[in-house]
Figure 1 (spheres, one colour):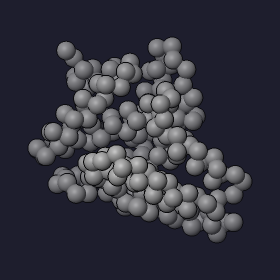
Figure 2 (spheres, rainbow, N blue to C red):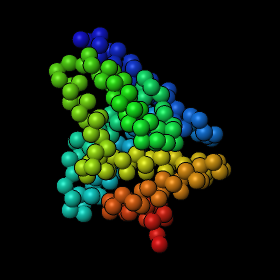
Figure 3 (cartoon, rainbow, N blue to C red):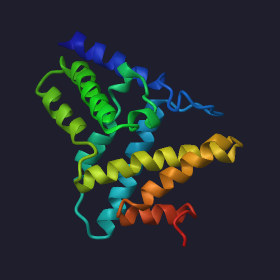
Figure 4 (spheres, rainbow, N blue to C red):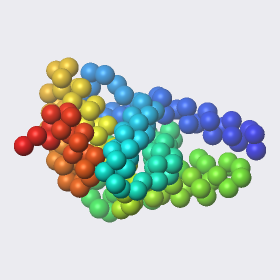
Length: 188
């Protein structure tokens, strides 16, 4: 069992080598490990804001889900968003296959962890407030990366930032409105 934990940890470390937006011209690479940190951090921030507005949030569940949400990419690599969501059938099949990779990755972990982690991964972007926050944090991270690329002169990311902003404005989360206003995006 110890060897299998070692193998799991070795594979997880590959997230630091998997580059996001790999089919796009980039000025600064971002790894899935960096992305996952930012998503977890933004999830915490959004959750704290939501709780300050009177909403109940299971922060532990949210943060665990945030850390696990792209873990399978240590095996699959990053799949381009435009391809992944180009068709409902494609999206569903990618989710199914990604789940198989995720379950295979965690299968040898001890003490019921595979079941626990698989449930967190599968429900990461559920309709619950935690799922909505995680999805918003994932988009917020992509927005901030896109804004950084654009500010450094990479015009390829302007349209991406605009698309993500539109999706974020539709979340219905007050925390997201607050963050967008703080970025001078949400002002009318």
